[in-house]
Length: 139
Image (cartoon, one colour):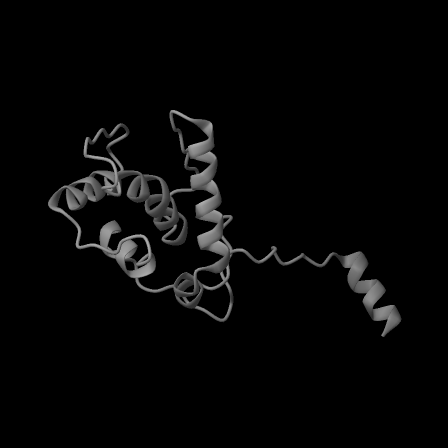
């Protein structure tokens, strides 16, 4: 998919087949406990491009939102699975916090940077003929 920049020094790892395995590898600070069976089922549902609406019920603190609103968008971004992701929550502040968490992981997660390069770097500027001519004149 276009629009995703990768560092030239790093080549992306082979695509991981499991969102849950990816999350446990790259976000171990969020996924500290052994996943329950419903986590695998939930992750498989999220991975399925045919499913547009997914509903899961589990007690608070069981990583539902962490998997769906943090790990899944990051997995989609880094594995180039989707270009557009919308995070919707019953409170806008919660959705904003998930976006902040996503940004924080992109900017500072050393595991992600080591595997995929720095996706937070500004895009390289394309040189135009005019700027090349100016460079040649000042050299």
